[in-house]
Amino acid sequence: MVDYTIEVTIEAVDALNSMRQISGNENGGILLGSEINEKYYRINRASEPCILIDRSSKCGCTRNANKANEIIKREFESSNRTRFYLGEWHTHPEDNPTPSTVDISSIHDVFYKSEIVIDGVFLAIVGRKSIFWGFYEGTQMHNIDVIMI
Ligand SMILES: [Zn+2]
Image (cartoon, rainbow, N blue to C red; front, top):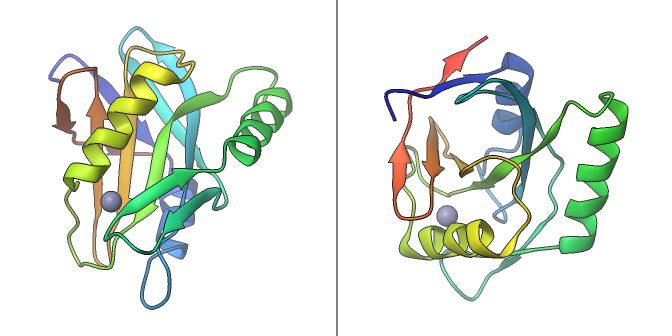
């Protein structure tokens, strides 16, 4: 992952932190942003929640495809077609979150079953104290260092 540059705007981080799971249910949504250059991405939007959470499992998240697609369309059009789907976010009821095996397999599904524009899928897991940032390129989840802008 050393050859990738990933920026995240303060606005997107603030939006994610506002959905931290202090009490109550897990939440999830999608990440949107732009390609600045080859292997250089900027995440500049965290959507409102649009992932249905299956509360019977510790972290079973099911995407509400219609709502997610509406958001993707809305953001694409309102950004002069520069902002597109980059990945997923969801909350964890822990301070410093790490991806569960369910998380890895659901991102694997997204990678192979969704229309993705770039060569991977981002995952942000919002914990109570920190956010885990990952990038899945088809075989492995990479823990990434993002640059806050
Ligand atoms: Zn999870």
